Amino acid sequence: MKFKLLPIGYYAVASFAYLLLAIYSFSQIDLNLTLSVHPLYQSFQKQLISLGYFHRPLSTIIYIALIILLVISYLSLVISVKKKLISQRQLWFLVIITVIVLLFSYPAFSHDIFNYIFDARIVTKYGLSPWHYRALDFPSDTWIRFMQWTHRLTPYPPLWIGLSLIPSFLGLGKFTLTLLLFKLMAAGFYLGCCKLIAKLNPQALALFALNPLVVIETLVNGHMEIALIFFALLAIYLNLQHKTTLSWLSFITSVGIKYMTFYLTPVLIKGKHWLRPTIWLGLISTAAFIFWYGFQPWYVLWVLPFALLLPGKSWEIKLLILLSFAALLWNLPAVSSGDFNLPNPTSRLIIYVLLPFAVLTIPFFIKSAHEKNH
Image (cartoon, rainbow, N blue to C red; front, top):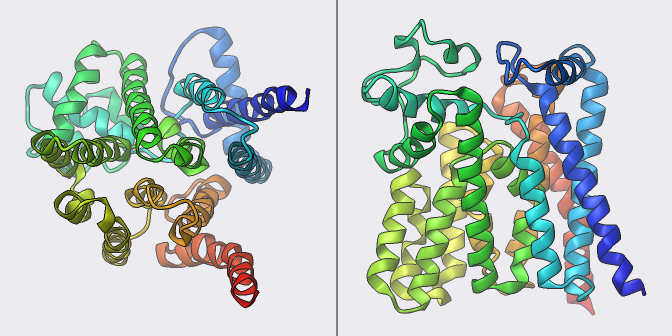
Protein backbone atom coordinates (compact mmCIF):
# COMPACT_ATOMS: atom_id res chain seq x y z
CA MET A 1 0.00 0.00 0.00
CA LYS A 2 2.88 2.38 0.75
CA PHE A 3 4.21 1.87 -2.76
CA LYS A 4 0.88 2.94 -4.24
CA LEU A 5 0.37 5.90 -1.95
CA LEU A 6 3.81 7.48 -2.35
CA PRO A 7 3.46 8.49 -6.02
CA ILE A 8 -0.01 9.96 -5.37
CA GLY A 9 1.32 11.97 -2.43
CA TYR A 10 4.31 13.09 -4.45
CA TYR A 11 2.10 14.14 -7.38
CA ALA A 12 0.03 16.23 -4.98
CA VAL A 13 3.07 17.98 -3.44
CA ALA A 14 4.88 18.53 -6.75
CA SER A 15 1.75 19.67 -8.59
CA PHE A 16 0.92 22.06 -5.75
CA ALA A 17 4.47 23.50 -5.91
CA TYR A 18 4.27 24.12 -9.66
CA LEU A 19 0.75 25.54 -9.39
CA LEU A 20 1.99 27.98 -6.74
CA LEU A 21 4.91 28.88 -9.02
CA ALA A 22 2.53 29.51 -11.92
CA ILE A 23 0.30 31.74 -9.78
CA TYR A 24 3.22 33.58 -8.20
CA SER A 25 4.74 34.29 -11.62
CA PHE A 26 1.94 36.80 -12.28
CA SER A 27 3.11 38.89 -9.33
CA GLN A 28 6.01 39.96 -11.55
CA ILE A 29 3.94 40.93 -14.59
CA ASP A 30 4.97 44.20 -16.24
CA LEU A 31 2.74 47.09 -15.22
CA ASN A 32 2.37 48.11 -18.87
CA LEU A 33 1.12 44.70 -19.95
CA THR A 34 -2.48 43.47 -19.97
CA LEU A 35 -2.90 39.88 -21.10
CA SER A 36 -6.70 39.94 -20.89
CA VAL A 37 -9.44 42.48 -20.18
CA HIS A 38 -11.77 39.86 -18.71
CA PRO A 39 -12.95 41.09 -15.27
CA LEU A 40 -12.05 37.81 -13.55
CA TYR A 41 -8.50 37.92 -14.92
CA GLN A 42 -8.20 41.63 -14.10
CA SER A 43 -9.10 40.92 -10.47
CA PHE A 44 -6.53 38.12 -10.37
CA GLN A 45 -3.82 40.31 -11.94
CA LYS A 46 -4.55 43.26 -9.65
CA GLN A 47 -4.09 41.16 -6.51
CA LEU A 48 -0.88 39.55 -7.76
CA ILE A 49 0.57 42.89 -8.88
CA SER A 50 -0.16 44.27 -5.42
CA LEU A 51 1.85 41.41 -3.94
CA GLY A 52 4.79 41.67 -6.33
CA TYR A 53 5.15 45.46 -6.49
CA PHE A 54 3.76 46.83 -3.24
CA HIS A 55 4.41 44.07 -0.72
CA ARG A 56 7.94 43.12 -1.71
CA PRO A 57 9.08 41.71 1.67
CA LEU A 58 6.17 39.25 1.62
CA SER A 59 6.79 38.52 -2.06
CA THR A 60 10.45 37.78 -1.31
CA ILE A 61 9.52 35.38 1.50
CA ILE A 62 7.09 33.60 -0.83
CA TYR A 63 9.74 33.33 -3.54
CA ILE A 64 12.28 31.84 -1.13
CA ALA A 65 9.67 29.42 0.21
CA LEU A 66 8.81 28.39 -3.36
CA ILE A 67 12.46 27.72 -4.18
CA ILE A 68 12.85 25.62 -1.04
CA LEU A 69 9.65 23.71 -1.83
CA LEU A 70 10.76 23.07 -5.43
CA VAL A 71 14.21 21.88 -4.34
CA ILE A 72 12.81 19.56 -1.65
CA SER A 73 10.23 18.24 -4.11
CA TYR A 74 12.97 17.63 -6.69
CA LEU A 75 15.29 15.84 -4.27
CA SER A 76 12.40 13.68 -3.04
CA LEU A 77 11.61 12.76 -6.63
CA VAL A 78 15.21 11.83 -7.43
CA ILE A 79 15.47 9.66 -4.29
CA SER A 80 12.10 8.00 -4.99
CA VAL A 81 13.11 7.19 -8.57
CA LYS A 82 16.47 5.85 -7.42
CA LYS A 83 14.70 3.55 -4.93
CA LYS A 84 12.26 2.50 -7.67
CA LEU A 85 9.30 3.89 -5.73
CA ILE A 86 8.31 5.88 -8.82
CA SER A 87 8.32 4.23 -12.24
CA GLN A 88 9.35 5.86 -15.51
CA ARG A 89 5.69 5.93 -16.55
CA GLN A 90 4.71 7.75 -13.36
CA LEU A 91 7.63 10.12 -13.83
CA TRP A 92 6.45 10.95 -17.35
CA PHE A 93 2.96 11.60 -16.01
CA LEU A 94 4.42 14.16 -13.60
CA VAL A 95 6.44 15.76 -16.42
CA ILE A 96 3.25 16.20 -18.47
CA ILE A 97 1.42 17.72 -15.49
CA THR A 98 4.30 20.16 -14.99
CA VAL A 99 4.19 21.23 -18.64
CA ILE A 100 0.43 21.78 -18.58
CA VAL A 101 0.52 23.81 -15.36
CA LEU A 102 3.48 26.01 -16.30
CA LEU A 103 2.54 26.55 -19.93
CA PHE A 104 0.21 29.29 -18.72
CA SER A 105 2.64 30.89 -16.29
CA TYR A 106 4.06 34.38 -16.86
CA PRO A 107 7.79 34.69 -17.79
CA ALA A 108 8.45 36.30 -14.44
CA PHE A 109 12.22 36.31 -14.07
CA SER A 110 13.45 37.31 -17.52
CA HIS A 111 12.37 39.62 -20.34
CA ASP A 112 14.21 37.68 -23.04
CA ILE A 113 11.09 36.03 -24.45
CA PHE A 114 9.67 39.47 -25.23
CA ASN A 115 12.80 40.23 -27.23
CA TYR A 116 12.40 36.94 -29.11
CA ILE A 117 8.82 37.92 -29.89
CA PHE A 118 9.66 41.40 -31.13
CA ASP A 119 12.67 40.26 -33.17
CA ALA A 120 10.31 37.93 -35.05
CA ARG A 121 7.65 40.65 -35.24
CA ILE A 122 10.08 42.94 -37.10
CA VAL A 123 10.08 40.27 -39.82
CA THR A 124 6.46 39.09 -39.77
CA LYS A 125 4.75 42.46 -39.29
CA TYR A 126 7.15 44.98 -40.79
CA GLY A 127 9.01 42.82 -43.33
CA LEU A 128 12.37 44.12 -42.12
CA SER A 129 15.57 42.64 -40.73
CA PRO A 130 16.05 42.46 -36.93
CA TRP A 131 19.80 42.74 -37.59
CA HIS A 132 19.23 46.22 -39.06
CA TYR A 133 16.23 47.46 -37.07
CA ARG A 134 15.58 47.53 -33.34
CA ALA A 135 12.43 47.83 -31.26
CA LEU A 136 12.98 51.58 -30.75
CA ASP A 137 12.70 52.04 -34.49
CA PHE A 138 8.96 51.34 -34.13
CA PRO A 139 7.89 53.86 -31.45
CA SER A 140 4.18 53.55 -32.27
CA ASP A 141 4.18 49.80 -31.65
CA THR A 142 2.50 49.18 -28.30
CA TRP A 143 4.46 45.95 -27.75
CA ILE A 144 7.64 47.87 -26.86
CA ARG A 145 6.00 49.18 -23.65
CA PHE A 146 6.86 46.02 -21.73
CA MET A 147 10.19 45.17 -23.33
CA GLN A 148 13.73 45.58 -22.04
CA TRP A 149 16.78 46.22 -24.22
CA THR A 150 14.72 47.99 -26.88
CA HIS A 151 17.84 49.78 -28.08
CA ARG A 152 19.72 46.69 -29.30
CA LEU A 153 19.77 44.93 -32.65
CA THR A 154 19.11 41.21 -32.33
CA PRO A 155 22.21 39.27 -31.20
CA TYR A 156 20.68 35.96 -32.29
CA PRO A 157 21.71 33.94 -35.35
CA PRO A 158 19.41 33.37 -38.36
CA LEU A 159 18.49 29.83 -37.31
CA TRP A 160 16.89 31.04 -34.09
CA ILE A 161 15.12 33.90 -35.84
CA GLY A 162 13.84 31.37 -38.39
CA LEU A 163 12.44 29.15 -35.64
CA SER A 164 10.82 32.11 -33.90
CA LEU A 165 8.98 33.10 -37.08
CA ILE A 166 6.73 30.04 -36.67
CA PRO A 167 4.94 31.13 -33.47
CA SER A 168 5.09 34.74 -34.66
CA PHE A 169 3.17 33.93 -37.87
CA LEU A 170 0.71 31.66 -36.06
CA GLY A 171 0.12 34.34 -33.41
CA LEU A 172 -1.72 36.46 -36.01
CA GLY A 173 -0.48 39.69 -34.43
CA LYS A 174 -2.20 38.92 -31.11
CA PHE A 175 0.27 39.34 -28.26
CA THR A 176 -1.22 36.91 -25.74
CA LEU A 177 -1.59 34.19 -28.37
CA THR A 178 1.94 34.82 -29.65
CA LEU A 179 3.37 34.62 -26.12
CA LEU A 180 1.52 31.36 -25.51
CA LEU A 181 2.83 29.90 -28.79
CA PHE A 182 6.41 30.85 -27.93
CA LYS A 183 6.01 29.11 -24.58
CA LEU A 184 4.40 26.14 -26.32
CA MET A 185 7.44 25.89 -28.60
CA ALA A 186 9.74 25.93 -25.54
CA ALA A 187 7.59 23.24 -23.91
CA GLY A 188 7.84 21.11 -27.06
CA PHE A 189 11.63 21.32 -27.05
CA TYR A 190 11.63 20.56 -23.31
CA LEU A 191 9.63 17.37 -23.85
CA GLY A 192 11.94 16.46 -26.71
CA CYS A 193 14.96 16.90 -24.43
CA CYS A 194 13.31 14.71 -21.80
CA LYS A 195 12.71 12.00 -24.38
CA LEU A 196 16.29 12.10 -25.66
CA ILE A 197 17.81 12.06 -22.17
CA ALA A 198 15.58 9.10 -21.29
CA LYS A 199 17.04 7.27 -24.31
CA LEU A 200 20.65 8.30 -23.67
CA ASN A 201 20.64 7.75 -19.91
CA PRO A 202 17.28 6.68 -18.38
CA GLN A 203 18.51 7.33 -14.84
CA ALA A 204 19.06 11.00 -15.72
CA LEU A 205 15.48 11.79 -16.72
CA ALA A 206 14.40 12.74 -13.19
CA LEU A 207 17.59 14.76 -12.66
CA PHE A 208 16.85 16.86 -15.74
CA ALA A 209 13.11 17.05 -16.17
CA LEU A 210 12.09 18.36 -12.74
CA ASN A 211 15.25 20.28 -11.89
CA PRO A 212 13.87 23.64 -10.63
CA LEU A 213 16.29 25.70 -12.74
CA VAL A 214 15.42 23.74 -15.89
CA VAL A 215 11.70 24.10 -15.17
CA ILE A 216 11.84 27.84 -14.43
CA GLU A 217 14.14 28.85 -17.28
CA THR A 218 12.35 26.65 -19.81
CA LEU A 219 8.67 26.35 -18.94
CA VAL A 220 8.29 29.65 -17.08
CA ASN A 221 10.76 32.02 -18.74
CA GLY A 222 10.77 30.26 -22.13
CA HIS A 223 14.47 30.66 -22.82
CA MET A 224 15.84 29.65 -26.20
CA GLU A 225 18.51 27.50 -24.49
CA ILE A 226 16.10 24.58 -24.54
CA ALA A 227 16.14 24.59 -28.36
CA LEU A 228 19.94 24.42 -28.64
CA ILE A 229 19.97 21.71 -25.92
CA PHE A 230 17.44 19.66 -27.89
CA PHE A 231 19.38 19.70 -31.14
CA ALA A 232 22.68 18.98 -29.36
CA LEU A 233 21.15 16.00 -27.54
CA LEU A 234 19.64 14.82 -30.82
CA ALA A 235 23.07 15.08 -32.44
CA ILE A 236 24.62 12.89 -29.72
CA TYR A 237 21.79 10.37 -30.00
CA LEU A 238 22.07 10.19 -33.81
CA ASN A 239 25.85 9.86 -33.51
CA LEU A 240 25.40 6.80 -31.29
CA GLN A 241 23.02 5.41 -33.91
CA HIS A 242 25.81 5.86 -36.50
CA LYS A 243 23.70 8.36 -38.46
CA THR A 244 26.66 10.64 -38.96
CA THR A 245 25.24 13.06 -41.53
CA LEU A 246 22.02 13.67 -39.60
CA SER A 247 24.03 13.96 -36.40
CA TRP A 248 26.21 16.74 -37.79
CA LEU A 249 23.20 18.54 -39.28
CA SER A 250 21.51 18.50 -35.88
CA PHE A 251 24.70 19.67 -34.17
CA ILE A 252 25.17 22.52 -36.66
CA THR A 253 21.55 23.52 -35.99
CA SER A 254 22.26 23.62 -32.25
CA VAL A 255 25.36 25.75 -32.68
CA GLY A 256 23.50 27.89 -35.22
CA ILE A 257 20.83 28.72 -32.66
CA LYS A 258 23.19 30.25 -30.09
CA TYR A 259 26.76 28.99 -30.63
CA MET A 260 27.25 27.83 -27.02
CA THR A 261 27.19 24.07 -27.66
CA PHE A 262 30.26 24.28 -29.90
CA TYR A 263 32.32 22.69 -27.11
CA LEU A 264 30.57 19.34 -27.75
CA THR A 265 32.45 18.93 -31.04
CA PRO A 266 34.92 16.33 -29.59
CA VAL A 267 32.00 14.06 -28.65
CA LEU A 268 30.75 14.13 -32.24
CA ILE A 269 34.25 13.37 -33.56
CA LYS A 270 35.65 10.97 -30.95
CA GLY A 271 32.53 9.45 -29.42
CA LYS A 272 30.75 9.46 -26.06
CA HIS A 273 33.85 8.29 -24.16
CA TRP A 274 35.13 11.85 -24.67
CA LEU A 275 32.15 13.27 -22.79
CA ARG A 276 33.88 13.96 -19.45
CA PRO A 277 36.76 16.09 -20.85
CA THR A 278 34.22 17.74 -23.14
CA ILE A 279 32.08 18.70 -20.12
CA TRP A 280 35.13 20.32 -18.59
CA LEU A 281 35.72 22.20 -21.84
CA GLY A 282 32.12 23.41 -21.58
CA LEU A 283 32.59 24.51 -17.97
CA ILE A 284 35.77 26.43 -18.85
CA SER A 285 34.09 28.04 -21.88
CA THR A 286 31.05 29.03 -19.82
CA ALA A 287 33.22 30.45 -17.03
CA ALA A 288 35.20 32.48 -19.59
CA PHE A 289 31.98 33.82 -21.11
CA ILE A 290 30.65 34.79 -17.67
CA PHE A 291 33.93 36.53 -16.83
CA TRP A 292 33.69 38.49 -20.09
CA TYR A 293 29.94 39.14 -20.31
CA GLY A 294 28.37 38.50 -16.91
CA PHE A 295 26.24 35.82 -15.30
CA GLN A 296 22.68 34.70 -15.95
CA PRO A 297 21.19 31.59 -14.30
CA TRP A 298 20.24 29.93 -17.58
CA TYR A 299 23.93 29.79 -18.56
CA VAL A 300 24.17 26.77 -16.25
CA LEU A 301 21.97 24.94 -18.77
CA TRP A 302 24.70 25.15 -21.40
CA VAL A 303 26.48 22.31 -19.57
CA LEU A 304 24.12 20.67 -17.07
CA PRO A 305 21.98 18.54 -19.47
CA PHE A 306 25.05 17.03 -21.10
CA ALA A 307 26.83 16.38 -17.80
CA LEU A 308 23.79 14.29 -16.83
CA LEU A 309 24.84 11.81 -19.53
CA LEU A 310 27.92 10.93 -17.45
CA PRO A 311 27.78 7.89 -15.12
CA GLY A 312 25.34 8.43 -12.25
CA LYS A 313 27.93 8.85 -9.48
CA SER A 314 30.00 11.46 -11.33
CA TRP A 315 30.80 14.33 -9.00
CA GLU A 316 30.46 16.81 -11.85
CA ILE A 317 26.74 16.03 -11.90
CA LYS A 318 26.36 16.64 -8.17
CA LEU A 319 28.23 19.94 -8.28
CA LEU A 320 26.28 21.22 -11.29
CA ILE A 321 22.98 20.33 -9.63
CA LEU A 322 24.06 22.23 -6.51
CA LEU A 323 25.06 25.15 -8.74
CA SER A 324 21.62 25.04 -10.36
CA PHE A 325 20.06 25.40 -6.89
CA ALA A 326 22.29 28.36 -6.04
CA ALA A 327 21.54 30.01 -9.39
CA LEU A 328 17.87 30.26 -8.40
CA LEU A 329 18.85 32.87 -5.79
CA TRP A 330 20.11 35.20 -8.53
CA ASN A 331 16.55 36.53 -8.86
CA LEU A 332 16.30 37.61 -5.21
CA PRO A 333 17.37 41.26 -5.76
CA ALA A 334 14.86 41.61 -8.60
CA VAL A 335 12.06 40.15 -6.49
CA SER A 336 12.94 42.17 -3.39
CA SER A 337 13.65 45.51 -5.07
CA GLY A 338 12.30 45.28 -8.61
CA ASP A 339 15.69 46.24 -10.02
CA PHE A 340 17.52 43.60 -12.07
CA ASN A 341 20.73 45.64 -11.82
CA LEU A 342 21.07 45.70 -8.03
CA PRO A 343 23.51 45.12 -6.55
CA ASN A 344 26.53 45.39 -8.85
CA PRO A 345 26.49 42.29 -11.13
CA THR A 346 29.80 40.99 -9.78
CA SER A 347 28.71 41.49 -6.17
CA ARG A 348 25.36 39.95 -7.00
CA LEU A 349 27.06 36.87 -8.43
CA ILE A 350 29.26 36.47 -5.36
CA ILE A 351 26.55 37.13 -2.76
CA TYR A 352 23.58 35.37 -4.31
CA VAL A 353 25.19 32.51 -6.27
CA LEU A 354 28.79 31.72 -5.40
CA LEU A 355 28.48 31.98 -1.61
CA PRO A 356 25.30 29.82 -1.47
CA PHE A 357 26.99 27.38 -3.86
CA ALA A 358 30.02 27.20 -1.55
CA VAL A 359 27.77 26.55 1.44
CA LEU A 360 25.87 23.83 -0.44
CA THR A 361 29.08 22.07 -1.44
CA ILE A 362 30.45 21.82 2.13
CA PRO A 363 28.41 18.69 3.00
CA PHE A 364 29.34 17.22 -0.40
CA PHE A 365 33.09 17.56 0.26
CA ILE A 366 32.76 16.37 3.87
CA LYS A 367 30.93 13.25 2.69
CA SER A 368 33.50 12.65 -0.08
CA ALA A 369 36.38 12.98 2.38
CA HIS A 370 34.65 10.62 4.83
CA GLU A 371 34.07 8.00 2.12
CA LYS A 372 37.68 8.31 0.96
CA ASN A 373 38.99 7.72 4.50
CA HIS A 374 36.80 4.62 4.90
